Structures are given as structure tokens and as C-alpha cells.
Image 1: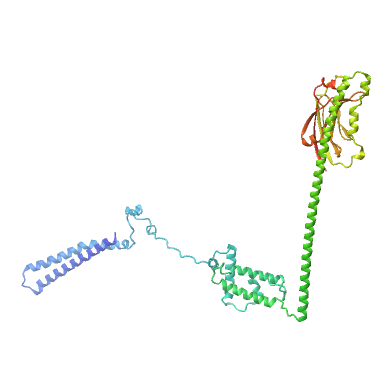
Image 2 (image 1 turned 180 degrees about the horizontal axis):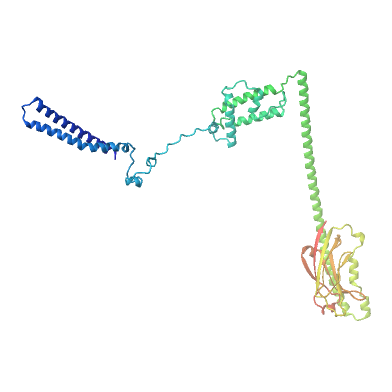
Length: 472
């Protein structure tokens, strides 16, 4: 039931009660008047008044149930009304009462009052964000800690307590030199506080006052703990002399350092010139060596051509005199090419030779088969390989030779082991120019047979090797 409907019912009951009371009073008055005051009146007035009384009594009887119903509904109607729109819960739209009044009357939760920020958080907010997070925290805590002293709430701060304002322990001593580490540390702490409380970095309204208070504390500490100098004329003179000596010593050290640097630069320049001279000499020696090797190669080629011509002449001559009178060119050539030990001098390099194998050597009869080996020589130095059977022996051995300025080629000869003497199968000569060109790579060279007639019957024999130079 809405509030407007309740008001209408109340007004209806009040109007009906007033009408009934008026009729009752009118009928009673008319009845008394017609009976007592006008005894001679007609019976019509008496009847009319009696009718009004009966009507009033009937109206009262009729209004009595409405009054009882209103009285019975007063406790329920006193409750707060709940909206019965289509947005309300189903039990309210259907008229069903909820289980309890608490579920029917759900009030909106009241908003909790905002919790005031702590003094530390408020101080951080006032400091701003121009400093780092750690610096903001330190500045805010320092401002809160010194606020009672800055606002003069606490007076007469002891000197021993002022050290804690700079996060320093109380030093052991009463007087310090201005250059003492304690005074220097105090100065560094003040500079750090100056950065924290600078107006361009710290927006807190008490930042400037706090820093001024710290400066005053610093001045008091310096005045109390720093040793004051009261110099006499003699002390000042001695001090000036000491300073002059220190200045002269400093200049002397600077001059020594300058001379040392100049000497170092000059030495480096001399070493550089010496290195360049050595490089130039080495290049010149290398050029001469290459020229000598080229000349030796050409001379060896000419000697081989002459030997070939002599062999042709030897084959053409049939008399005993022609065979015996022709000199052994190879022996003469070897005697001319090999210098004496006194002419060798110091070696100019090191030649490393890896003799790998030989291929296509002449075959032998099974019962008379023997081993093959190779001889390698550079000048007067000569080495023999291991003796291996077969037509394709694999030696895989290493040899090292000292190279002198007169050495120009590497000689390799392959022999077959015999019963009484070894048989020379073939030989070759490799100039150093070719070895240096193919240094570190595997190369193959064809063996030259000594007998020209036998060379036409045998296959092409090949020797495989590797060589590398290391020049001093």
C-alpha cells in the first residue's frame, strides 16, 4: 500500500465519522426539542429526529469494521515500503513477504572515510619526483627527523648529537687537522645533503630550512673540532720555505718525467729505424738469394743439356778410347757445385722436407726382389730414408737441412738395394725457387734415369714430397 492510498483511506474515515457525528447530534437535538421544548408540536418532527438517531447508529456500526482493519494494519504499515516495480525481486512482485526484514530492507553500504596518509608518505609526496626513489626516501626521513630542531621545538643540541645529523659516528679525538679524513668525510656528507635539499631538486617547503640548519651544525662542528692555526712570523717563514721546496721538488719530478718520456720516444725511434734497416737488409739479402737461386737453376739446366749432348756423343762412339776418354760429367758437375766447408758460413734458413712415397718403380723378379730407398741431399748434407720393398714404396719420413747462401737446390735419388752394391734407379733436382713457390703443399716430380736406353723400357717414375722454408 502506497503512502497516497493510506492518506485517502484516512481522509475517508475522518469524513464518514464527522458526517455520522453530525447526523447523530442533529437527530438528538431535534428529538429533545420536539419532546421538551415544543410539547405541542406534531409527531412528524419526533419521527424525523428519531430517524436521524437511528441513521447515526447504523453509520457508526458500518464504520466500525474499517476502523478495526486500519488499527490492525498500523504495525505492518509502519514498516518502510519496498518498491514493487518490475525491476524488484520476484517475491516482492508476487506479493510474497521475504523471510526476514533484514533481507527485505537491504540498505546500501555506507562509504568508509579515507584513511589519512602517514607523515612519512606525506613528506615523500612533498619532496617530489625530481630525485631518485632512494634519495626521496632519505630526504623525507631526514626532514621528519630534523623537523623538531628546525622549528625550534628542541633547543641546545649537543655537539656529540650533531654528528648523527650527518650519519657519522662520534670521532675519537677532540682536535683534527683540516685535511684529516674525519673533516673531509664531514664535508662530503654536507655536499651530499646539499644535493638532497636543493630547491631545484627538492620541492618540500621545509627543505631550505633543513639545509640551513645542517650548515649551521657543520660550522659548529668545524669550529669545535678543527685545529686552528696561530702562526708566528718564524712559523710562517718556515712554512713558506717548505712550500717552496715542495714546489721545486714537484718541478724537478716533472722535468725528470719529461726527460724520461723524451728518452723513451728517442729509443723507440731508434728501434724503429733499426728494425726498418734490418728489414731493408733482409729484403736485399732475399733479393740476392733469389737471384743466386735463379742463376743456379739456369746453370743446372745448362748442365743437364750439356750432359744430354755428351750422352748422345757417348752412344755414337763405339771405340774403347771414345768410351774411356769422355770424362764423367756428373762427377765433375758435383765437384764444381759442392763448395768447401770454409765457404758455407752461417746458415740463412731451415728446410724441412717430408718424403712421402715413390710410384712406378721398375719391377723385379720374385726371388731377387729387394728394397728401395731414397737419398736426399742439400749441399754437403745428405740423408737416407728407410728401405721399403715393392714398386710403390711409402716412406713418409722427415728431414731437416740447414740452408746456406750457396745452396740452391734439393737433390733426390732413388736406389734399389743390391747384393754387392746399390742400383741407382733415377734422380732429380728441384730448385729452391720451385720449393718455395709450393711451400707446404704436396708436389710430384719425375725421376730421370741415368741410362738413356733403359729409360725407354721403364715407366715414368714419380717421387712425392712436401717442403717448407723458414728463413732466419
